[in-house]
Figure 1 (cartoon, protein in one colour):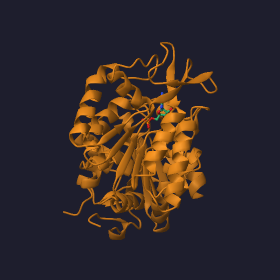
Figure 2 (figure 1 turned 90 degrees about the vertical axis):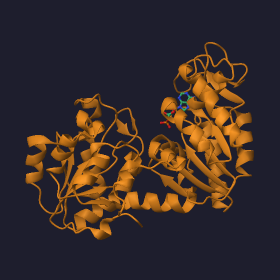
Figure 3 (figure 1 turned 45 degrees about the vertical axis):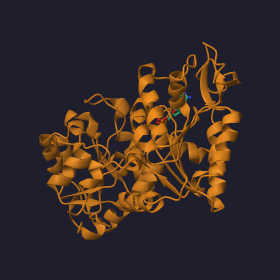
Figure 4 (figure 1 turned 180 degrees about the vertical axis):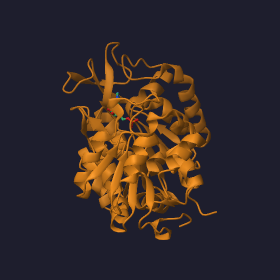
Length: 397
Ligand code: AMP
């Protein structure tokens, strides 16, 4: 390990600024999947046992640079308390007098959650003045948020330059597991990229195609590629101003002999809601008033066949709007085949991303996967071979 870890830190009685990723998926105001909280527990538990004063920093959602109730972390303090079995205190600001007063009251072994770091514009700008404000409350810095490590923000990167910095146990486990499974992967390698964050993920695909033999494109992402082929995708989620980018990805993949796999059919509905009336439709036959909300059965069979051939599968993004039945069927079917092949020792499966993990849990497949990363964007950038600023800052020089 070329990173400083908790093994190298002396934390007893120290104020430890612990960066976690508490940006858990929510559904109707409730936590839909607790994986990110569960992954934070080893580091939190260790810091409590060792008598540190643990001050938790995290972002939540995408606030517009100021406080709002929807993106407050306040509700997460209760979930952390329940998981840890001790009271977790909360301060309504991550800097300034509110934070300082709460930190000042802490005893050894206490845990304090500070409000959403993204409520300050300095967070995403990695503003040195904001970094200094954050650093004022800590003696050392532990980063356990691999899933936020692709961003050079104040709490994910800046702090590592002004305080003694260490990787937390979850960050350490992610780096070790990803390196082991994907550092020198068994070939052929397939990647599934689906989901709805089309504009953020599209740019990664050209690089990713250089690393994998098959690029299976699903979810909302696939519609942009189908539209780029001149197909009519009706009311489907589709980034029409990115059709050229999609064509560039196809060209880039062709140049490196990576095969792009797109759906041949889908499940289409007129409304975006659970149990909306739907029909199975060829991708050549989508009505103007319809939207594709899941993979169709022919596409499922094609992908399942492909999984029988490949030796390593990486997965980010569901194939459909899996939160709503029956549009979870495609994701569930592919997930359970991948899980069975993994259990039989025929396939190495690594999946990442908040919604992906929640979809694989829902499909009952996650615990048979080789490794589940909590990271989505960071996971994809790591796969691309990019340097992750939050990880780099922890490296022993
Ligand atoms: P991401 O965060 O990019 O992994 O996207 C996950 C989200 O993509 C989930 O909330 C899914 O409901 C959504 N999704 C997947 N496929 C589709 C689709 N065809 N149309 C609309 N939303 C989709």
